[in-house]
Length: 125
Image (cartoon, rainbow, N blue to C red; front, side):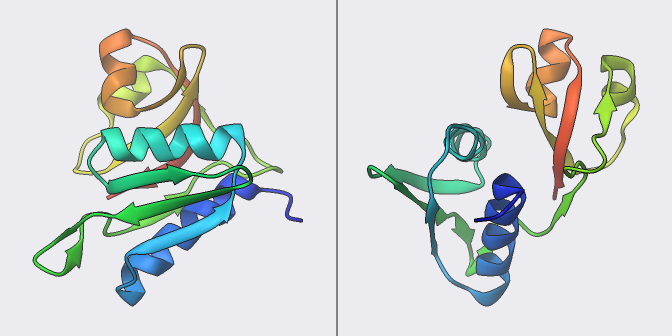
């Protein structure tokens, strides 16, 4: 049992991509399911399969390289990081944030469109 299951899940995806593995299987929670669906919608995952207690995600590759190049956990149980809409819009670069907002879990692009801020779970490239 871990204290920060969503962080462990995201690091497993990053490590699988670096190792060239295509699938990651982990214990399923509501938050992990939501983040997996957001990553699939963002084009980082190929497929999300849910069983009773497990979730299996397939990474998306392009020319034998994973689409998800790097990932950095921003919030953690001891230090939560929040950004409002202005801070999200002022962020420049190719990276995106995975965020929990009042409207649910979403990427920073969608949060900009909906004009909402929230807790930043991770930054992805």
